[in-house]
Length: 218
Ligand SMILES: C[S@@+](CC[C@H](N)C(=O)[O-])C[C@H]1O[C@@H](n2cnc3c(N)ncnc32)[C@H](O)[C@@H]1O
Picture 1 (cartoon, helix red, strand yellow):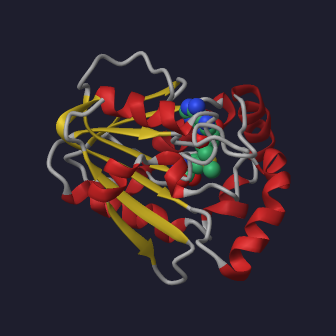
Picture 2 (picture 1 turned 180 degrees about the horizontal axis):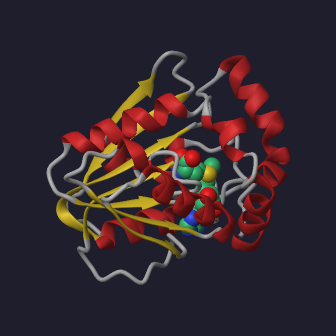
């Protein structure tokens, strides 16, 4: 049986890098549009929250970067240099002046000091990292108490036909670079689930926006 810290199709760091080396060139075309609403909702939420130091975790090709308010200072990290290269190109081409850094780093074990950020946001990343529990722990370390941690993701359906389909497609997730059978409980322990704001993203509710106020717990 899979444990909460290892979803059934967990990807290791090498599998992630290999998958996104293949994806980088076509990512925006294939995935950019379907996930666009989730990304916009998450950034709108970030823009409305207090604090200016924002970490975007698994920034990818930087599709969200143009949506941040000018008063937010963004640092983006990603495991994949191929994805980051595209994000850097976007910053240059669009003349974005509030992006402080785009660096290769493992979100499960960053080089940032404690309390470095007011907000961390991970869009379509939690189901890709090898150990979501380590990701959450690391974000709690580097976000200051009183700050916020946000996730946008597809989470495993609670039942019905959609659950059956998602279980069935889980094995293909290695080559896709994400897990279709990723339950929200894999990411958030019960005490965080109880405190978090959890909202479906319209129009289909296929993606979910999670906002976790950071109470300082580690
Ligand atoms: C599905 S893409 C999402 C990209 C972007 N957030 C977006 O909204 O389009 C997942 C991204 O997470 C990155 N990633 C996966 N595991 C990571 C880790 N442990 N640390 C940092 N980035 C990671 C991948 O390289 C990839 O760029």
